Image 1 (tube, rainbow, N blue to C red):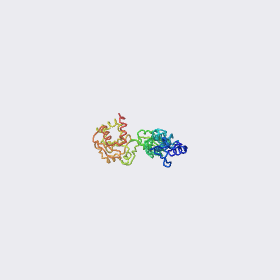
Image 2 (image 1 turned 180 degrees about the vertical axis):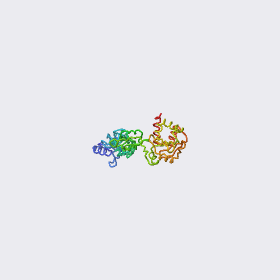
Image 3 (image 1 turned 30 degrees about the vertical axis):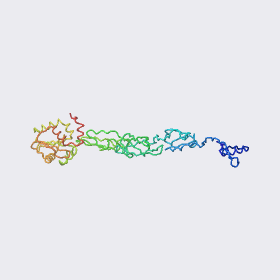
Length: 401
């Protein structure tokens, strides 16, 4: 308190203000008649309680991760500190704290939490044409642009779908990327890869023939080759190509009945015309009235569909020199060709005998008496058909019924 008196100060004032005071002494009072030995005791003044005027301060607030605070009056009484978080973070807890009279801060310490997902941008969707003779296209793209809105840290980026530079088949394909930040927030984006295949109209196989094609058979760059069944010959271009304009090159050929030239100089020249085209059933009999011969020809004449289906041509060698007759369909063979064929295939004119020759000119089976067409057909179907013929047989199973 201002003007507070001390004991010594009070005594001095008291002496100064009362100079006429006459000391009185008593026996045993502590005073003596001699002025030089007497003391004057002032009345003791009560002391006032001491007042403490120190400033009230709160402890310094700790810094928060990914945030900061500003205060109105530092750490002094009634100062308010406001918190804020860095970009990409959200404040959880008390936004402000005040320094109170007891030297403590109000509320509790807040935290800055990263709850914003990262930013991700995928490449643009794209469309690509398949390469020639292929049903796929190789597609490349740049990785997505990824940025975290908080501390900038991206922990991982995952891809759902094929990698860049992969071969994509025809159709639409969704490519999806997902990015994760340090707080396990995630964001995704997607784009589409579309692959188109240029296609030409589907070709039809020729009558009495079939097609073999590369790739898918109708896509850009595919080549289709025309083939004719046994007993037929191709007339026209052998193959056609699917062009980028989605049209086929050239024009379709046809399969015309095979023309057999019987005016050849040797049996070998005659047989070469059937190589890889027809199977041969050569029948030799001593005369047209031979019972076995008549029976066999009668059965075969009723099975022309099955013979054509299996690419078979019948050569008849009937009679003995000089009255022998040879024919293929309606065409007559010369005596020299008849003789060479019998010698070459070891067929005797003395009795009925037959030989079955495959498309490679190999003797596959011999018969000394008539057999039903079904027996011949079963043998061919089981042992002599090529893969392509097997497919055709399955497709044409009931064609002769």
